[in-house]
Length: 123
Image (cartoon, rainbow, N blue to C red; front, top):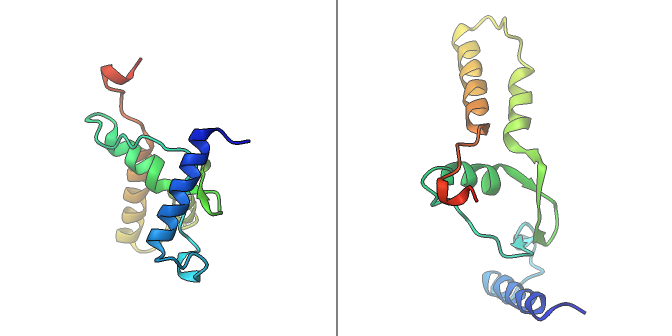
């Protein structure tokens, strides 16, 4: 039997899904709607690592497919994009394209580095 907290969250997510879909939850338009199974703090306002958290945790992580949002930290959009970029030959005859690809790869690698935690979040 689920805990009262889990039951409350399930009721809330069902009501939220119903409200967002206008009561038409089975409408294919809402097939991709995913709601967190467990409430999570969105720390994107953290002055040191907030941007990284927003980028990595909420926009770059490919979730498991299903009715609820379950992050799959092993699959990142930027890693797949980098594989795509690396599939181009570095000896491409267009130097501007080659440089643009190198710049994108450098930016992806830089964005993956997590900034140092703020002192109040280090524990």
